[in-house]
Image (tube, rainbow, N blue to C red; front, side, top):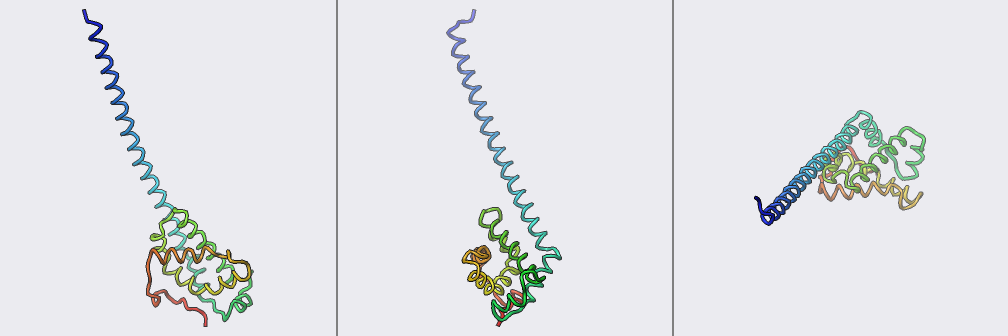
Length: 177
């Protein structure tokens, strides 16, 4: 006959071993889930970045950019006269501004790395910002200091992450004289 004093400690040890095995299994499962979540997040970030790249490489974007960079003016008032809000060129300018504002939002919210964004659009954006900065400043005088604030925030964050780029390679962006 088996002694009850012997069975009770054995069952307690078996229960403790079972709890330890369950805890170890739980920890391993959590680590696998964390790894899977990290891989899913990286995949989503890559998908987001790829969709941004696709927009950046479309002929529509290129036409907008070329149209904007071909604009010329003497002053903010001259810009307003030459390019009324409902005109084709102004609409191209506002479309690019909105796209760049979205890029800034994605960078500031941490959805896209500033360095990666800089590698994607710095060449074009630096030229765009440096050409249109006087227009943006004129808009701020007219509409308030918040107007297109995201544009210089994006410029500053990309300048910081990408570093200085030799401006002779920024393309045909020239500040109006």
